Image (cartoon, rainbow, N blue to C red; front, side):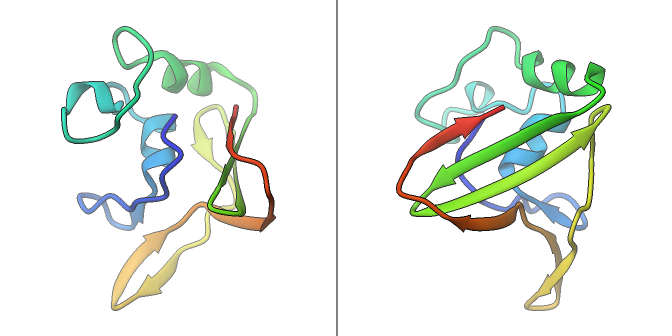
Length: 106
């Protein structure tokens, strides 16, 4: 799962890279040499399939001193917040606090 909070520019509203990887097949960085330095998995379907088949799944990302959180039910993002930034609809991953830790938890 990417720890980046970069927004995708193909969807409306724009979504975080984390949300895309959690909800779309073959969305991992392994299929695009310019995406991520590290990528796991074999076919790019693992976490999105687990997410789709799970009654609920929680994703926590700790990066740059911030803690971000997303929750899914059967693969569908819950409590999505849509913001408008420079006239563009964006669905960022929710900031829930500060932290000194780093990493991703699924």
